[in-house]
Amino acid sequence: MNFLIVVATFFIMEGLTWLIHKYIMHGFLWTLHKDHHDHTNEGQMEKNDYFFVIFAVPTIALMYYGTIHNFNYWFYIAVGIALYGMAYFFVHDIFIHQRIKFLRNTQNPYLLAIRRAHKQHHKHTGKQDGECFGFLWVPVKYFKMFFNQNKK
Image (cartoon, rainbow, N blue to C red; front, side):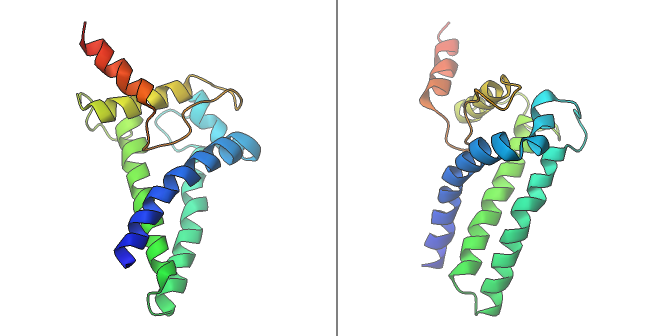
């Protein structure tokens, strides 16, 4: 049962990420997220990196609370959130934005679709008119772009 809680939480985080990204990061906390779109701190820490702390604090609190209560479901929810956060860091910061040069020349259709969708998201430098607010779920059109490109 605990494994299912972790897996379900991980996948639920994708929907929450979409909502948080669209309505909070591109909403009232745009001041923290803006430098991620205008690339003023390319290669350096950004104000956007504070979201790591903002999301880590409640996760740590849930993990602690779940631990002191005999590893109840709150602990496993926190584990799912933490695993999603780790996946986000590796895919977003390391793979997509190349903060660490890794998988630069991949030909994996899924990874290329994620990269393309994120590029579409960054095409919009303002907080309005954005697209592709999710992370792991990639709209089918970005896979089609990859496969149509390879038919030529």
